[in-house]
Image (cartoon, rainbow, N blue to C red; front, side, top):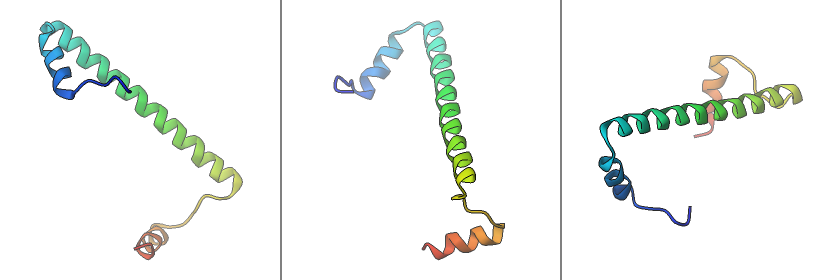
Length: 73
């Protein structure tokens, strides 16, 4: 975003809105963040399913996971 505005400027713009408009903006941002997170989860799920299909996914017990994580340190 090459024409970005400062966070403080955004706050000032939001404060200039009516209470109803601020409430609507909060709701809109919340819904967009939820949708963005859903898309991220779907991408991760697709990657996981592809790894399972191709046999590149790691499998094991909780103990295996713990050992794998500790061995990376």
